[in-house]
Length: 283
Ligand SMILES: [Zn+2]
Image 1 (cartoon, protein in one colour):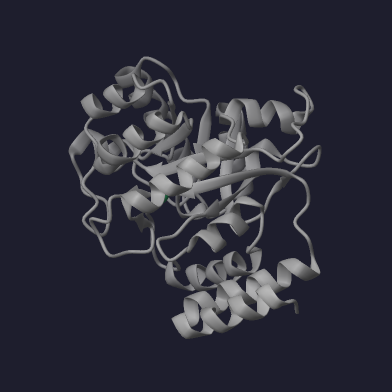
Image 2 (image 1 turned 90 degrees about the vertical axis):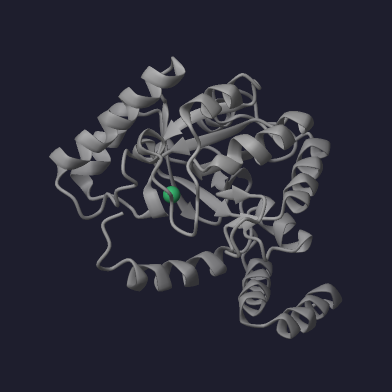
């Protein structure tokens, strides 16, 4: 272990278990270096309206976007897919894609002005029923209105994707129900924003059953899961993109590790816990 790992280990242990897991994950990255490729980051909320890990302080998000913009590594999802497929040249430094899930009001109010200021493009995957009905997301997540969604689109940095209609978990529903979920969200986004979504993100990153995966493949150019790792060049299925969630507890050092495709062990531990937590859930 080198000096910086030891230092991180010591400060991580001081901050408790969550950081302890990050420290272990960072140590495991030193044994197996992340491969070259595209990192896709996941955000949920900005503005710290709820004291949950998925809700970042606006100043923290601003600092992260400033750093990404300065790095010159941020690309939009379509450009990243072209690079991954070998249809566009690989940049010298590995590209980063910014994505958001769900469609809460803070996206239009807080996140988009920051993205716009730094010129950072982002995909927002919408669970359309929440916008249609003004239905709140868990942890007091007020949904965005469609009018706000259209205003955000006018910034020029936003692309909308689908996240099903009701945030349905696609590993446990009939293919007919899944098809209706996908088609409804596609139709609603097309009707409200003028463009059908080409990209999809699985709710709670649960991997689909095989018949449902085929439905997704037939409708979208890409689909995102979790994984907290890079998507390697020439060896990535665009319908099973790995993403790295950025959390409120990620100090800049952990943010940088995730940008560089690290901390996969943290994801594997979280995935094991979530499989238990979501066992009886449907959304
Ligand atoms: Zn979601």
